[in-house]
Length: 382
Image (cartoon, helix red, strand yellow):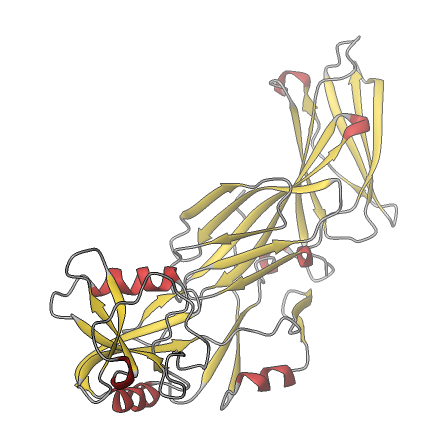
């Protein structure tokens, strides 16, 4: 890493090829779903009149009643205008209007979605109005264009964590936001997209969440192993295994090598006998993971030992001066919650971006900081 931590910010500029130089708002794909009406008559055509706040009409292709099977669906290509649209849905027969339904619709802005990624996970959160819900989530690998995850979301959820993602990979999440207009017996589905990129561990390291692990086979005493880890990458150290999930992940990897029977971790009670702590100073909090037959006052450093009578590995105190293989640990710094990065507007040849003050990032103890802006042109799927 060369002492430089990189904060990857993926600005989702997929709308570039869809806009003209006079449009500065994100395009919005909307589907209006409704049942045939009126019930007492037999319309032959449904039409939508969509008017912007500036009294501009948006053309929408009418549909024939025969296309309703059983629900009718009409697609609208709008813009992310916070002033909204006045929409009238009309049922007609022989060019005579039988019944019309009117409503005001404000598209959900892309800023309603927020994404937080680690090396192998992505947390997508959203903030919607009371009558809106997120119904489906599709995750695409931007390189292969294949769907890696498709999920139906509970209407009461406000976030979802996708796990087991490939590190250092770009993804695009597409979500369907559903607005139900109960008084009109009508549903409006809006598709929103947001780009993301999983973090990447140093080459050759194992990744899970925000943690990167490296197994070193050279036998070193505990203190020398700690020093060796710190020389591998900035702010790395002997492994802190804070959760059962991390222990299972590391054990599963170690079990692929029959020669790795005992390895140093960052756990030790050299500061206070009987009170082991990890390299970052946090207290030991795992349960049913420690076994020992050695004298406690002479074994202040803890190693992972392969379980000869059961599955996986367990932690055991050991003599600190004995050379053992070891596990190094690097934690990807989180982006502070107060940090924001926004796409303000797009034209044919320019894009305007804005980000918040970078001073909160100083708390991450980073030697230097670089911001990388990436974009990808997306061709019209139609």
